[in-house]
Structures are given as structure tokens and as C-alpha cells.
Amino acid sequence: MPNIEYIITAEFHVDKGPSVVHQYPETLPGYEFLPFFPELMLPDQIHRREEDFTLFLLFRNKATGHFHYKKDANCTNDIYYMYTVVKNVSDESVRRGLVIKALCVITKLSYFKHFRPLLLICLDKYFSANDESLLAQLYAAINANDFTVNSVEQPLLKRLLISSVLDLPLSEKIYNDEQFRHRLLGIKLPNRDIFIRKDLSYNSIVTFADMKIPVKVPMLQLPDTVGDYMNPTDLNLKPNLINLLSARLATNHHNNELTIYGLSTPPIIVLINAVLTGKRIIFLSYENSAGHIIDLILLTLKIVSGGGILTGLLENYNVFPMIDVSKIDLLSECDSYLAGTINPFFKAHEAIWDVLYDIDANEFRLASLLDEPEVSKNSIIGEDARFLSNLQFSLFTYNDDLTTLQLIFRRHINELIRILVSLRNYNDPANKQCSLLMDGVGYYWHSDTSKLMEMSCYQLISSRFQDLMYSGKFAYSLLLPNLSNELNLMIDLQHHLQKLYNASNMSSRAKVHEREIWFNILKYLISGRSLETFLLVTYLIPPNSSTSLQSSGAHGGNMTIFDKNKGIELLLMNLFNEDDQVKLNVVMILQELEDNFFCGWCLNNFMKSNYVYEVAFSELVDTQ
Image 1 (cartoon, rainbow, N blue to C red):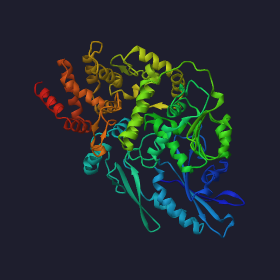
Image 2: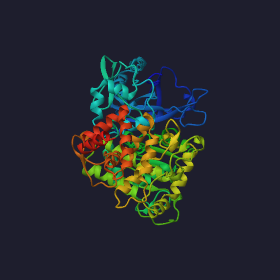
Image 3: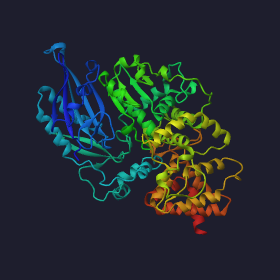
Image 4: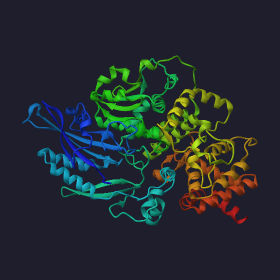
């Protein structure tokens, strides 16, 4: 598979408007059935900026190979990214004194932004003469390199685990220890076209126009993640997130799936609920660049997907990062979509959208057609309150790095989906061969009162989300059958660990069968896959509050909380349990973890950071 499959150039002519100039290595299959194609490459208001970029997703017909704007049942599951760089150059020799040209690549690589320097160099040279040979040179240069990190991709659960380990010196270990790196990533034959960097990514050198240009290659790729999850530096993540948190809800319309806390519902909660219930969402800005709008669209996907926790968004939700009025017919065909636009026409036509984010005013609006009587007045549920509190502390108090913010997104979307699917998270008809080791599945509430209040708050969202998920629009990566071990045994680790964690903060443990829980967890841990699943779940348990601090090596020794592993801390605390049988089971679980390559490395580093646990474990092993 080539790294890039097509290169296309377009220009804006004062009299003729946008037009495609060159296509390489051949005309895009199905091009004649893609109306207003050059408009996708030349965003509105480009004459006001020297440079911009656009993005559109394409899908390919299985039988004909033709490209389509919208996925249907006849398309493959592959997503093709149409990434365009646009330049606006002053030229007094032409009418209006401007020359606008664009160059796009069509690729299946989700880190297409890393090609930007190469595309800009090529576009600069292309301005002087519309020379198609430059496209051939660029095509050959990028496709000459092999960007493959591993010929066989690691299982999703392992990739989720590796990308959740923020509290240990993993980056340093991967960079300095080649044998460890290859074993962790399952690399059998190293690729000599790439070399490791210090930031959990690789570099590859592409030679073009007598220059050697580095292209960064992600170490791991996750579903529904555009760019490099381990290095999220290309979305202006912090400033855009701060804008989302400070946005206001500018509407008098109430909707029971969106404004669940009435008109005081935080807009970021409205946005998450809108995606989870399949609404038609538009991001609009007349003052900002197309690239700025696209980055906000991609940030929304990052928040809602949790970096691979919720999948299917890019493939099934109808994501149009940048559109213009020529694509209104396309939007009318979609029952749900997430789209960005510069044209203010959309704001006045609310029949085509449910939720509109006016970026310039930093306001969210709801279409009047969604207005309905308020069913009940709800207080903010614990998980939403914790999510908002953690985000604000992380951004404004601790100034945490971007990977910590991503872990907050991941933990929240995982908790939220567990609330939404509740008791159905194991009842999958396709997995009848799996056996449940012990009762207790779904989100854990510490009291029936909390459960009743929070389920009533999210009841309508839960019903709509389950309809969408079980019809195939979304997929939850951590459904219980996906976590079964090689013997098809299942246990809802997160439910039981949170039950134990809650009990550890209570004066009485009478109602929690600790011995039974630890014994069944031990029965579940039979292999590397189940051990890595257990370790992943320990990272996904969110802290109960934002008041405890730790110093993290991953953050240069700065104080932070959000990367602390509450699950593994719970396991180690039970080395001091008053029940000898519980202590024995915990020791055996730790020994199983110790024997696994990656889990053992993590456990060893956990122990090093707390000498008391290390001594207790050693003494209990000696007395066995």
C-alpha cells in the first residue's frame, strides 16, 4: 500500500472560480461523480489569509473502486483522508492581485499532517509554474519510504494500555532499550527507514527537492484518532479546550437529551451528549481559518472517542471537517453529522442542524425544533462533576501536559459509557460461549439513591445511545465479552475494583465480599492478555477527587493527580488487609503480574516508588 495514493492540485480563477488543475498518478476514480470537488480544496475566505489547510474524508466503493463523499453499505471500511494545503500569494500582474493555489494528498495514514512541510515546499515550487512533474517527484519521494512500525498491529487493549501509562518512565525506557521496545511493540524485523525519537514516536527522512525532510511516524495508532495520540501537539489542544470550557449556552430551548441540567448545562456536556445521541452538529466561524475549525472538530472526536474507547465515529457518524454551501444536499442525506464551515449561511438555516457552535461568539445554540418540555430537574451527576473539576484543575492549577488531559477524556468517556450501557455491557448474543465468573456488572454506584438519581438523569441518552451502538453506529471497545480471557471467562474488573475502592474508604466492609472478589480476579488472570487487561482497567479508574497530589516523573517532577493509578494502589494496599486469605490472593495476583513482561516492568516501577509496598510484598512472599 502506498503512503499516499493521489496528489491533486487546484486553483481559484477570478472568472472561472475553483477548478482542479492536475491529478497524479491518474484521475481520481469516480471523480466525475464528486460534485463541486475543487471547492473542498479552496475554503471560503482564503483571500483573507496567506495560508490555510482543509480536510475531507472519502470512502471507496468495494466493486467499482470509485470514491464517495459519504459511506454506504457498498463501501470498504477504509477511511481516506483528503488533506489540502492552500496558499494565497500576492501578484500584481493578475486581476485582484492574488493567486490562490492548493495541493492535496489522499492517504489512509491518519497522521497526514506530518506531511505538511513537504506539501508546502512542493506548493511553493508549483506556484512558479504549474509543472506536473513536481507532483510525480513528491509522490515518489513520500512513497519511497516505509513508515511501518510493525507488520502485525498489536491488539487494541494492549495499545490502550501502553498509551495510558503516564506515571512511569516508559518514554525513557522505550528510547534507551531497543530489546524492550521491540518486545513491547511485537517488532520481529526492525524497519530501517524509521528511527526512534525520545517522545514515543519515530522519524523517517524523506528526500525531496534536494532536501532531507523528517516525517514523524506514530509509535501506536488508535481507532478514531487523527494524528499521533502519544504526541497530541497539532490541535492547539489547550487553547481550544479552554474555549470549549468557557463557552456559553445561548438558547432558550430545552432538550432532555442535551440540556440534562436545564439551561445551565455546561456546553461541553451538551456537545458530548449531542454526539452520543447522534445529533446534527455544525461548527461555524467566519473570522477564523478553516484549519482552526478543523482542529476543533478533531478535538471533539478526541474527547468523545477517548482515544479508542468509543469507535466508529469517523466511519459511521458522517464527519465533514470542512464544507461549504455546495454540500447542503449531502448534509440533508445524513441523520447525524459533525461538520465545520466558514459560511454564515448555515447559522440562519437551523432546519439543517440540531446543535450549532458559533466559534466567533463562543456560543452553543440549539435548533428550535428540538425544544421540548423539561421532564425533570436534575442535579449534576458525580461523573460529570468529577470530569469538569478534573479538567479545570488540570488546565488551570497544575498545568498538566496534553497526555494527561487525554487520560481525563479517556476515563470520563469510559465511565459515561458504562453508565449508558449499564447492565447490558455483557449481554451480547454473539458471545454466548463466555461465562461470567461472578455477579456484578456495569457501572458501580455506591448507593441505590445515587443510582436512581443518575440513571434518571441519563435515561433518555442511555436509550438513544444503546440504539445507536447496537445498530452499529458506535462500538465500545471495553464491552465485557471483549475482555474475556482465553478460557472465555469474564469478570467486570472495573465494577469490582470500584466496589473495593469504595469499601476501602468506608468504616465498614461487611457488605463487600472482598475475599470472593480477589479470588475470582485471580482465577481470571491466566495469561498475558488477561493480565494486560487487568492493568489497563486499573488505569481507567478515576480518582474520587482532585485534592490529592503526587509528584510525577512523567511531568518533570511537577505536582499532578490525574495520571495516578488508583487501581494498582488499591491492589497494593490490600497487602495489609486483615484477612490472610485476601492477602494471599493479592500476593498471587502480584506474582502473576510480575511474571508478565510489560506488567512486570510496570509493577517493578510501582514498587520502586513506594518502599513500604515493596517490603510488605517481599515479606509475604517469603512467608508463603
